[in-house]
Length: 215
Image 1: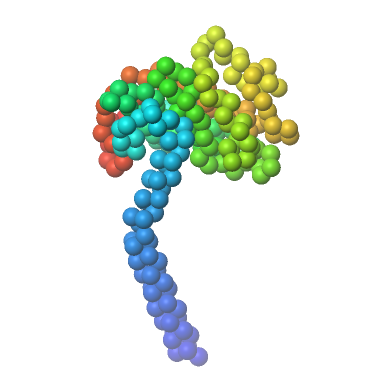
Image 2: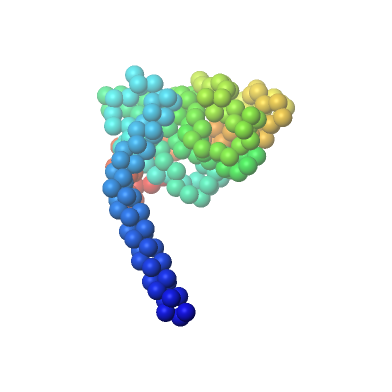
């Protein structure tokens, strides 16, 4: 009986090692493909929030790591991508977090024109309730487009809220928390941009890989 148990244990161990090795090989073989797909998806999103006629630089690699828990919603590093046309900065796209969504963090990318107006906003990830909070996604609703062209400054601070709170942005029926969180995060991204504009648009090394050039 003991020998039988030892024999089965050896078989299971060999099987586990073989599976682990196979998974590792598959992961190694697909690593570059996955990286290319992630880069393509990111570029697609960047071109949604920054018009193609505003950038002729290597948008993916013209980036900087940034950190500000209060204004960017997380103590994790975020990324700023700089759009340049003939080497002149035209817009900056910031990844940021709305930490107070109905079901937790809402990941966003907020593109801001060099004059401070919003170029575009898109949701990168969320866990909001399907049919209610997920209207922040462009494929579900065009609500996210209401930010386009808007400015934030101290004089219009009170308008940067959902209508239920006295602001100008629509809330969703049965889901106020989600749009409220997104409005606040977009507002905070603009405040961050205003505070760090010159640092953000300075020429910098790519943020992909080792980079100590942070704001």
